[in-house]
Amino acid sequence: MPCRLPADCLNEIFEYIENDKGTLHSCLLVNRLWCEVSVRILWRNIWIVNPVDYGHRLKVGSSILNTLIACLPNKSKTHLYEKGILNSTQISRTPLFDYASFCKVLSIHGIGRIIVDVFKNHKYLAKEIIKMFMTKIPLKKLSYYTNSNTVNLSFIRYPGAKDCLKNLSKFSCNSNVKPAFFYKLSQICCNIQSLTIEFKSMVSNGLKDLISSQNNLKCLSLSQTYGVADWTGIIPSLSKHSNSLIKLKIYGNEYYRNKPLSFVARFINLQELVLSFRYKYYFDELNNKLQYITFSQLKILKFSYAYPDDDVLIKFLEINGKNLIEFYINSSDSLNLAIAKFCPNLRSLFTLFKSDKLETLKIILNNCQELESIETQYIYDLLSEKELLDTLAKYSPKNFCRLILFNYSDSKLVPKDLEEFFTNWKNRVPSKSFSFIIRGWNSLGNKEGNMIVIEKYKKLGTIKKFETISY
Image (cartoon, rainbow, N blue to C red; front, side, top):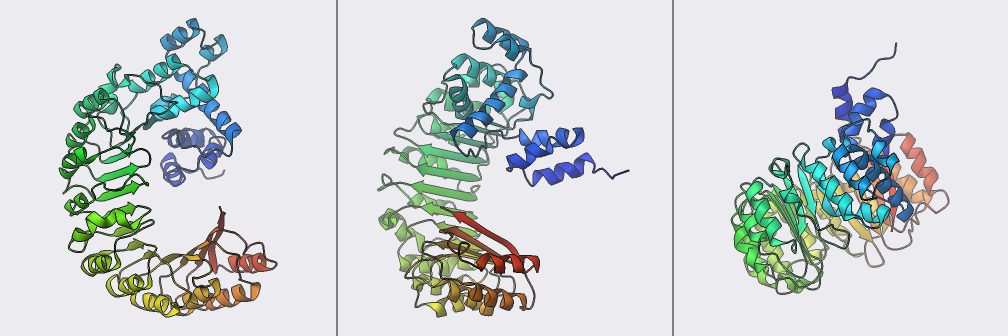
């Protein structure tokens, strides 16, 4: 008789593929036990959909919506039937599980989008579905963005809403949600640990009250993706969390100029800081403080595009670099040398290497002995692929095992180059499998013979992962 894994083991396995909806869906079809375990994880957050095209999105959305309709209480089904929104077949369906009770995440605009896709527009249906969610077990995450698909409902006043929302740990929204909603939520929910705000053209008066009412805010993400909203009024409320906040991410578009950044210095216990701005002058206000700030807990620092002045950032690394384990910057050579000097404990690094700065790469590999991964780019004025691979094979520290290459030019690697690199890598002591990930132009895999070499070293175990992600 074949051995069957117990439910708790299956649950632990399925947790690893929580975001792989296709695989989880396949698990439903194995047997009843697999179905009972995987369905709870699959429905935990049903709003994560990666549609191939509109037709696929419509198919997935229709399936989700039909299942939620089947879960509606009979009173709601009858009400929608009498209004001509549902037919007799839809209200007679009985679900195999109470799927809605498995949901820990609720997306208000997600519900609206699905209903618009399938029904074109039905406010009454959205109201009944959200009323159903308010009567289920407490949610962990709420997402409330107002857009053309969002149904404007006062759901926070529905029966059961207080018990449903009181234990929220994650909340994401845009800044122009009606003040009454923020006021009410601030009275119900005081334990949000992760808050994401997307600023639109205006900032609701109730937002600062919601922020101030939280007892232990740990993660904060602010993004100015559209409009010119002035959110300086919420900075005092944010500053209340200067001791508890450990993750801060700020994203700004071209309208972000002249927005304050110096308040970042108040969050002395940050472990992760991400600042994503297109232009260097956005850091003008922060430059004066950044070179003197001590973030004794900082582990992750990312500048997605522009970054502060070189001399300012070098002083910052001199103070804080020894604790960094992950650093992301489109840097110059002077900063690369500072990384080698002040960041000895890095495990992951994204930076650029000019074509005439091969020695700088060697210095980083020699000084950063904990390094496990490098992300960099290959383009006309940067180090070639072959120079990168040869240097990594000869000089990388013992724990190094991954290269992520953003390729914006035709690959010059040929089978001989790959054979030489993987032979050298295979003979390293200690032996460690290598991951090679290419993003951008996948011309390497299109060259004759290259994939034969890749497959050869996959079978030998030299290559742990080879992946190409075309843009």
